[in-house]
Length: 456
Image (cartoon, rainbow, N blue to C red):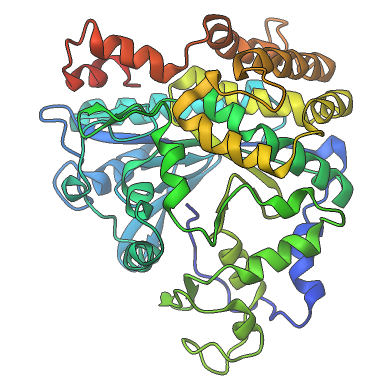
């Protein structure tokens, strides 16, 4: 989740609807300036007892953040607490229970993004060895209850932790027990955004299937391949889901703004976080927000509010792909490769659209509901399973990356990063199914094996 730094006090007040839309239109970039942002989270555990570290304890999360500053990272404070780091490779931040996230810098090509990931993982493992800390690359804590997990000292999380149980049964699980990989991508115009949004939203369940990696809950199989994805189905119906309006005629910046204006608020940030949970941003625009009477929102408030919706694809000044479970280094590199191949080449984008343009809203909802449990065995609208569809889509992504022709020093183009997905599709087995095979085989039903076989 976003890390908020205090502003300068000069952020413009929103005066019109055009100001709301400007955040989206301001993200438009010519193709030559399109960049790739990769975000990935990992679970942190003490090597000796596999406990999740608290923020303040000796050798805990605060110590981990401070130790990383020797690599040039600069601390970001909330009050007296260091709650994030910033540097040339983006930001390091904390999820609510101490899940450790790199929000990478916007980079030109996939060779750079994968190298950025490698630097980050090298740094955290180097520091972790000294602190007795390890890192786990899965989508869900495999053995921890909510009560066993610490809470990080971030004001927005206090507000969300209070609010989540009011609106869904699994919001606290989302906050405390999940990890994901995300990719953030650009668009050149409103029409380009719309096409990319429609294609990526339809195919987000395919990404969920390919990256499914959360089959355990509290030490046992949970009946799902991506329990992380299942959790989102009962987190908060006001701010999650497949967004059917994206496929309606006339969808664009204004329609997404209307959606966000209907999403209840969590907070506003002044000198700290002000609890506005459940309040209406439209009242804020009128200066009638009960939590800040007489005040009107700034562009920063609107950007904060945009970060509090969690659909499968999210629009800010770029598009966020949000369907994948957390996983190891090669899959952190594979997710942006998948989406860049599909969305950053016009021929590939058209081909992907041709594969999904006949899907109905009912198809989208059914597929979204089935994939967390069935993975690649889920079926598309014409009875084709997702393993078969995935091979077609991966071929499209492959062609898109070939057309980009971005080479590394060894002369390889970006298609090399799709290799882990080719293995998954050829076998028909998701990462979750591989973990289940280990659980029922070599691990002998002992979940502690995950700390050996799914660690970074």
